[in-house]
Amino acid sequence: MKRLPDERGIILVIVLWIMTLLSVMAGSFAYSMRTETRLAINRVERAQARALADAGVAYAMLQVLAASQPTLGLPPWPVDGSVREWRFGSGQLRIAVVDAGGLIDLNSADRSLLRGLLAFAGVGAEELEKRLDAIEDWRDPDDLRHPNGAEAAEYRAAGRVTGPKNRPFESVEELQQVLGITPELYKAIAGGLTVYSGQAEVSPALAPELVLRALPGMDAKAVAGFLQARAESAAQGLPPVQLPESGPYLSQSKVGTYHVFVEARLDTGSEAFLEAVVVPASGSTPYRVRARREGK
Image (cartoon, rainbow, N blue to C red; front, side, top):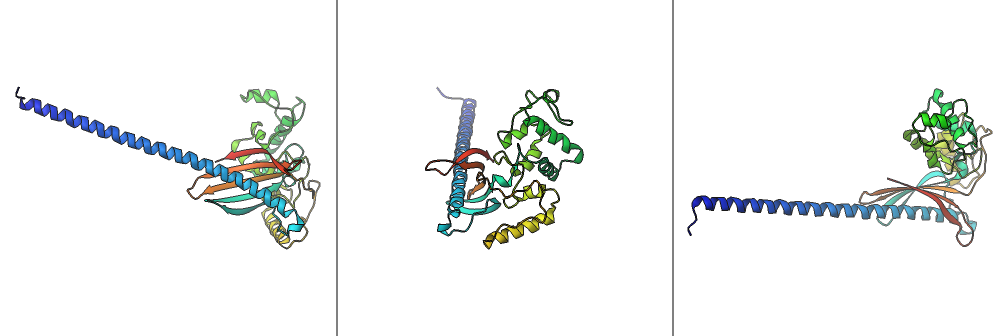
C-alpha cells in the first residue's frame, strides 16, 4: 500500500525523537559513569590520605623512640609542638608531637591556666568565669552549682537533654558538651588541652605556642623570644631554657604520653588530619595508641 507524504513525515519525526531520546540516555549514562568513577576515586584517595596520616604517627613515634636512645646518636625529635615535615610516597606530611606535660590538663590544671587559655581564645572578661565555673561543674562529683556555673537545671533551660557529667573529663572532645563552649571556642583551644598529664602545672620546655600564650604574664613578644631561645638551645644540645619568671603553674615534668598531630596531603590534593594519643605500653610494644580523632 502506498504511504501518503504526511505519514512519511510523521515517521521521520518519530525516528528523530527516538534518536534524540537515545542520545540523551547515552549522555546521561556516560555522565553517571563519570560521576561514579570520580566518587570511587575520591573514596580511594581519602583512604590513602588516612593511611598516610597513620604512617605519620608511626614515623613520629619511631623518631621519638630512636632519639631517646643515646647510643644511636640521633638528633632529638622535639615533643613541644614543633612542626616537622616528611615526604613519604606520593604525599607530604606535617607532624607535631607534644608531651602531655606541656599541655593543660582539663581535670587537674590550675584555674589560672584555663583562664589564660580562654582569654587568649577571645573570651571576654564577663564570660570567663561562666566558662570556668561550667567546666568545674561538669567535672566535680556534686550537683552544687558554682556561682557562675551550670548544673542540671541550667542545661535543661538551655534545651540540653543531659549534663553535666559530674565526673572527670575522659577526653578533650567531651569539652564540647559543656554549656557555653561553642564549636568555634572549642576549635581555638583544643590543641592546648589534654586529659593525660594529671598535673596542675605545665612544662614550658614542652609547651606549644598556644599554651605558652595562656601563661599569665606572657605576651606575644615574650613567647616569640622564648620559642626562639628554646629552639636554639635544643639545636645545640643544651639544657632547656627557663622562662624569665616562674609561677605555681609551671613544672619541668615530662609525662611520656604524647599527642601526635598529623596533616597528610596527597599530590592529588586529598587531605587527612589525625590526632593520636600514644601512651606507654608493656611487653614488646613500647607504645600504643590510646585514642584517635580524625578530621578533614
